Length: 164
Image 1: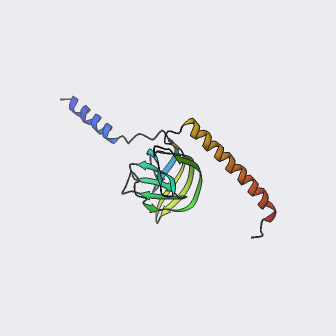
Image 2: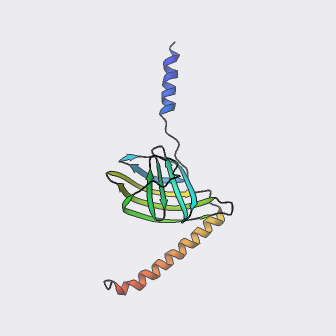
Image 3: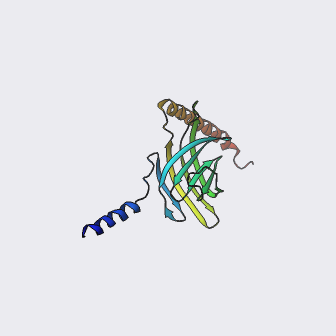
């Protein structure tokens, strides 16, 4: 009969473990001040282009159209959820779709957002959708081109500071 408490203890320990963290996402994410584990990163394509959903046990964080959305009612993020009001949303990302309809997403999101009193804060790096070497090279080329454009724009605006 002494084995029964050990079995019960083992069941409690197994049941208390959270879902494993996604290997496609690194960084930190808190919801209402509590650390949250992202269990899945799912890129997809919508009318306005590629978006990504970060699934958690508490809900889904969705990055689409340069905005973040949170849904605690739809942990898989099929619906957009509530638009978050962000005081900080630094992002650098790229993605695309393939001929078979699948999508991929690579990027960083550094954010501090709210929906009323609830805070959603994170600094995430994602590499989702099984990006191929060819897709990665294309994303790298696009990123380099964007950075070059930003340098040129910064240089041309340097003399016009304060003239707006």
